[in-house]
Amino acid sequence: MGKLLVFGHQNPDTDAIASAISFAYLQNQLGVEAEAVALGTPNEETQYALNYFKKDAPRVVETVANETDQVALMDHCEAQQSVSDIQDVEVKFVVDHHRIANFQTANPLYYRAEPVGCTNTIIYKLYKENDVEIPASIAGLMVSAIISDTLLFKSPTCTKQDIVVATELSTIAGIDLNTYGLDMLKAGTNLSNKSEEVLIDLDAKSFTMGGKNLRIAQVNTVDVPELLERRAALVAAMSASNAANNYDIFVLVITDILTSESTILPVGTDLDTVAEAFNASYQDGLLVLPGVVSRKKQVVPPLTNAFEG
Amino acid sequence: MGKLLVFGHQNPDTDAIASAISFAYLQNQLGVEAEAVALGTPNEETQYALNYFKKDAPRVVETVANETDQVALMDHCEAQQSVSDIQDVEVKFVVDHHRIANFQTANPLYYRAEPVGCTNTIIYKLYKENDVEIPASIAGLMVSAIISDTLLFKSPTCTKQDIVVATELSTIAGIDLNTYGLDMLKAGTNLSNKSEEVLIDLDAKSFTMGGKNLRIAQVNTVDVPELLERRAALVAAMSASNAANNYDIFVLVITDILTSESTILPVGTDLDTVAEAFNASYQDGLLVLPGVVSRKKQVVPPLTNAFEG
Image (spheres, rainbow over the protein chains, first blue to last red):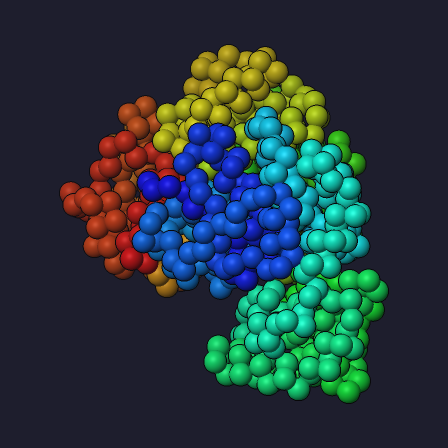
């Protein structure tokens, strides 16, 4: 067996990067030769957290079978969100807080999923269960991931456990949750310096639902109208991505992190089914969804039901 | 939400029955309205354990959606091993020690799998993590499940954790592990009073591998030649089962629990692929595999590799 490579999903967000680092460190402490890697470079929010806690970004890999035969998947399980050659290695561990789909193994494995707001909330429990101490810098990345995934506890995916764990981690990391949290989230909403092609790929995941290929991207902002000034160019980028990647529908979810409201801009086929999923009507081609901030809990399940129902 | 129904796989073995009882009790203690049910009646080994610890067999159900909308799967995850209307309810919990396949959800869930010898070894950890005391009778069923799944620690699926947990549980249950364990295992090897149709269905699971439908049944015995005197009738029963259920291959694994050797008798198509899977040759239509006692670890993975490779 080669070294255990630990990584989060493609288009890594803060939880994907931080969970790879925190789980690999835990495995190291338990005597396992493990290395955190990533399927992409950190976004600006994650880079803010890495800089703050003086940690390097994980090495980026395109494939894994060329260097190992065993991997650990963090914050995802679906093959289309994972490394391109996932079929050629054995998945030994999964720690995740998403649905299970498009995933199968030939052998028993360690799989730990809980319906909490963040993978790092589960990893915190693994540290406790294995009686391993969490260094301040690792705790800092872990709490950053919880802040990111729960939008500072505002998301409906946030559970009591996430808040309790984040509070404990913030003490270890020596930060004030609210001050640090808002600074970190704002660092991730600087959209003006990014091309439309980059924006629609910043936090995007692919799903297969009822035989259709959906790409669902989410962009956090504190100024929706400013972003919608670039609507024509965004639609052109999404259309090009649909054509290039064989997506049937590209769904862009623009989330205002201050008002907790999302605006949905879809491009492709079956747009009526998208509106039906949210029981909403298009206004100027947009669906405005008050209270919707979570792709996992408020966007993917209704779309799955509508396309597979 | 209705009451949480907790159940193991079809053709329940001791782990399937015991894990439903032990997990439902744990959930009750945590304030969840949960009931252990079963997808079949207990086999003789399990009935021995239930009688010994004075516990009733769980109520048998054919379907679940008529009485609830949420379930917990124990000791399995694959749809074809589960209740017939599994697609109509939400899977809220899985505790398992098998591969993950033919399983998907629309929503996040609690999924706990570990590569240990028995589901009840994992459930024991859940009791500890939640600080819930295990009553003696529940501990007795849990240790019975570990003895059953590991063939009293002889199976290669058995881990150190299974031995440590079984030893602790035996103390709570007030039994001598070896004396009780051998008595319980022997209670399950009384094959003479069973028809061939019953024998091949006693501990049988269905798998889809490389587009083929495989039925893999395992029978434990202390006298393989005695069982093989009934070979012609066994083959007839397996052929009839293939025809009735659309199985391509029926693989009967006859395991001598004293010598830890299995004899494989397959019926159907692709018999060469079956032999190839084990790197073995047929002698009088049988594959004799020394040291093979575990369907999960020593039978399913090589067959999966051979049929999907």
